[in-house]
Length: 143
Ligand SMILES: [Zn+2]
Image (cartoon, rainbow, N blue to C red; front, side, top):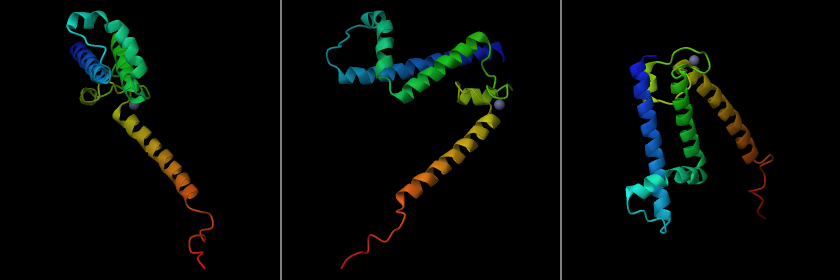
C-alpha cells in the first residue's frame, strides 16, 4: 500500500468519523435545550466528555460505523490497512476509496454476501412457514 494512499485513507476516515459524530451531536443538541454552547472553545474543551456521552446515545448502527472507522484507522497505524481480512490479498485501491473501512476484498465480500443471502432466504423460508397456518381451513367457517 502506497504511503500517500494510506495518508489519504486516514484523512478520509477521520473526516468520516468527525462528520458522523457531528451529525449525532446535532441531533443531541436538538433534543436538549440546556446544552447551549455559545462558542466553539467550550465545545472543544468538552469534546472528550462529549465523545463518551455520544457513545451512550449512538444507535447500534452508528456505533458500528464508528467502530468500523476506528478499526480501519488502527489498521492504517499498524500497517495492515488495505489487506483483506479473509484471504490476505491487497484490496483494490478503488474499492478502498469507495469503502474506506472495508475489511474484505471484493471477491471475499461477494462470497460473504452470497452466504448472507442464503442465510436470509433460509430465515425467510422459516418465517413464511410460521405465518402460513398449518391447516388453513379456519377462515371459511361461516354458518
Ligand atoms: Zn479476500
